[in-house]
Length: 554
Image (tube, rainbow, N blue to C red; front, side, top):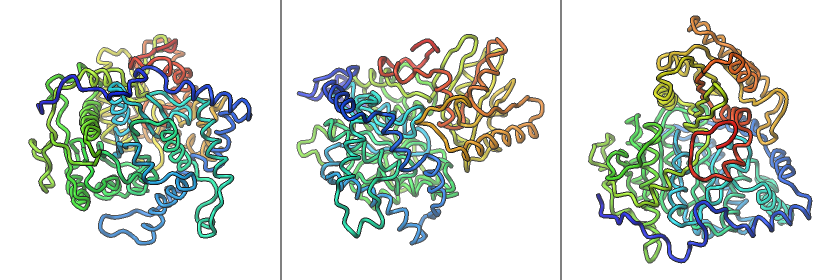
């Protein structure tokens, strides 16, 4: 090991809260007073936010963006996409937020195809249990928009969300927009940019010690990439996803993700299943005078956590451990300048990773172990019990992650009497590949296709879809059923217009059943609305990290 003290010193002078105590109760009280006096509620904020840009239109506008091949980027497409970061900077400047302000957030920036949200959640939990105040930006939300912004591990309250939302709204309303900006940047940011800008604003106002930032889409042109001086960056498992936006080859996709690499800032990655990834990552790192460091297997640490859900979860934990240690090492430096960590061995220019070219494991402090044990990240390896039915939720949506998800489900239900799948795939994801993996790995008794719609009878405003998109999603569910039936006629398949109706069908049998819900994080959000609608409130009350729940409580 590296000789690190197992009892990692907590930051002196900052232990004004515990890892399980809500942040800034005075801020919550102030927010309630302000919101009450102005009658600007959370629902009002969501109405305004959705008016800026609906989720559906976000997808449609993103899908019109041209692909960017490595080494041959179309100049027009490059200019349009690059403006995404430039415009986000413009909106930050209108609020008086400068790059120097953003540097105060001591950011950990994480990109990847699969596992970036889990890695961020683990890293945030480790640093919070080490005594630091944390801000965490993630996407997408599962049930409510406010999930995207967390303070000290807790989803920001409705009152505080409304307070900060309208504080920013009013600032934009009053700002004097120069003529040269008016044509390209409307007065208010679009849906996604507003949330990114708002998160940075909230983190600065609340004075967090560290901002853990999950990339929304890609990396290079993602609006979170206004961060130019992160403390450390990371790239999780890479694979094929959002190919209509990021490109059809793994090299194109990796080039997009590698766009978060910054000058002389350490970069950690997990072992990649696509070996072509390494050459692209190394080339990008060399441009920024830094190196790519591969994290070690979790089992190489002298005292690894006692249990993990899956191989992917183990890789995410190892990545979070290295990010946390590097961040703490950086905080201990007198000048607080970004330096390459001392406990690492780097890739030496080869596109193939050798086993000894990885970060060194170290003895885990008790604070690190507690942070891992108590980390909560809903919708990933998430189990919910309702009577005789046990639901296994995971937001896997790529061929590789679906394979890992089905293996987790298979191990967890080895003695199952009845297995059912609730599934959906969206946009450019290949349903045929998805179905082949499912059929190969799991012995199913039935498969149910549902759109990302919780109920036909009610709507959660934060997850409302336009009517035309609802019809498209319902049609896709029918099409998926038809494709499955034509390929695997021996396993019955049904489709329903909502998750609620699919769940009712399963539970009506009264049989003991294990149900895997996967294929889309938006499907997981719809399922949580049906299976555990009070989850967010219970999560706020319980930071113990217990990942198995029943419909009656955590």
